[in-house]
Image (cartoon, rainbow over all chains, first blue to last red; front, side):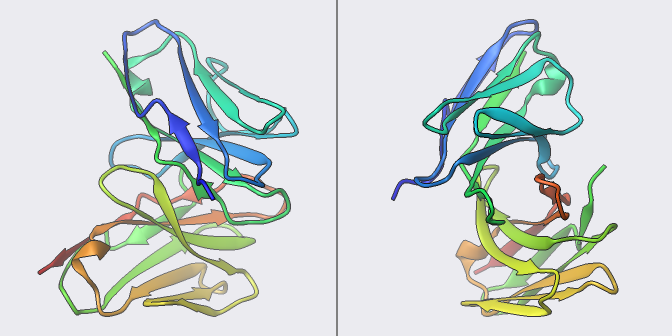
Length: 112
Length: 111
């Protein structure tokens, strides 16, 4: 049973560019959450997708957007990248109605 | 702002010793989960304790929850070098889908 997978593993972008990160949830999981983890900090909730809709959003600007596909996989898009967007981006998958959240290995984004 | 705060920020112990770390939070919760993170990689789910539970065990892990004090502790018994990692507590609230994390405790197990 494959766990949560994320791609790419690492990414380097320039300020002002746009980036798309991808996540495939665990088999049987229908809900995906995205988190941003800055160096030395705990993860911060960006948003959650369920049934292809954004169900809840954290305190992140509109530059952060997402999408969920019919197969439950998800994308995180960040526009107009800032240096402060450099972080580890984590995807978590959940079975709706259950409470355990299982995380992927993350994508390390560096903005120069 | 973060809901949970772990204490201590860092912990160094000898292999075979026990490691205890604490988590305090600010508002009422539905569940509290503990995660491990190795070298800035993904989070590994360790254990979930519900607000109506007081103690839970999983292998060498023991978690307690005191909702009156809004605190939890994670005990790792007979530590091994492989336990070297950062440990995070995360809480969720009723009708709220997000996990709120603390800044973590960094544990170093010396051989």
